[in-house]
Amino acid sequence: RPVFMQVGRSVSTLSSTSDASSLNLEAPTVSRIPCEAMYYAEGRGGVWLKAERGEKTKQGYMVLFPDKGPQPQDTKAAHIRLKPGWWKHLREEDVISLEPLSKLKYEPFELPSSDEKMYWFDGKVLANYLVSSANFVHPVSRRPLTRAEVLALDAYLEKHKCGKACVTHVYDKKDDSSDNAQNHVQALRREAEQILQGLFAQNSQQPAGGR
Image 1: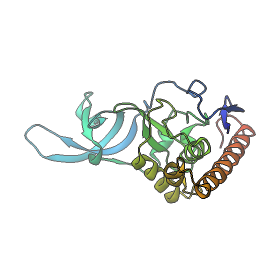
Image 2: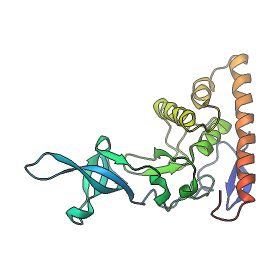
Image 3: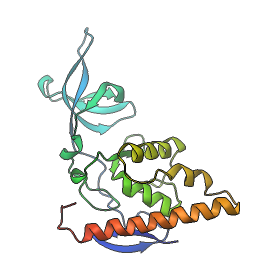
């Protein structure tokens, strides 16, 4: 079945096996996010300081401590605390809907395309995009998503009340050949497709930058 996707604030159809050529594939997340992070000075233990989280690394993220000079530190994710409303500082758009992430009423969903490239998504859009296509790959890099990532997306949907948390169910049942499983998966895919169309139609009627 086709997947309906907004491109340039208009709705077009893409096949579920389409490549990422119609997505916004500019550089991954580059915005610096206000946070608190553990700063380690030579010969001393760590201390929590105001900081700015930058690009992703294999260990965690590069973190800049403005009061400690211009050199960022590679910091473990567990040693970083984002502030409430942190996404309001983002300059990026959701690569699927092309809507500004800073306008979301809830935090975006973080999904790396690789070990060192991070993308944020409107989790509601991402979830319906994945379910409607039943093609569980990263929208940008096309790498297969893990079950842990799909579970995390369902948990995100429940936390932020973003609709039915059925991504893991479709992930688990998409290759089940039984009639029961396939009928249920197809019903969920149709429902997700309708939700996507509604979201994109709503966005196209709003002024640029509005949500």
